[in-house]
Image 1: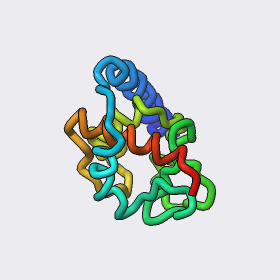
Image 2: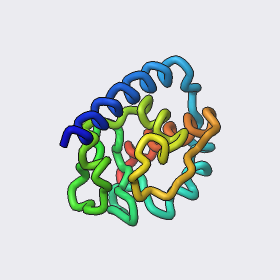
Image 3: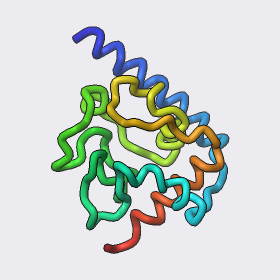
Length: 134
């Protein structure tokens, strides 16, 4: 229990620091380019509401949602279930750089998107895809 509390506190500090850093360095994104960057992500995730969940949770309107709490998605790791933060574009920017560093126990099989511009493009695509109606 104490280890989980310490991990959660460390994660909160890491995310807060990352969010501040991301706000300063996240470039403007291009949704058309981000659609291409999202291609490999589609193996497990969909940004369209009508598609529902796949191996990973649906990413439609992901920004503003609490991590690890999407209804009817039951495959979150314990780390995600206990994370209790809300996805913002800035946090997503930090997360996508190296998902396994932030949540080593996750079942997400991604090496991340190390290029800052590609991450910004991907985030711009998720924003755009989330406002379209199915």
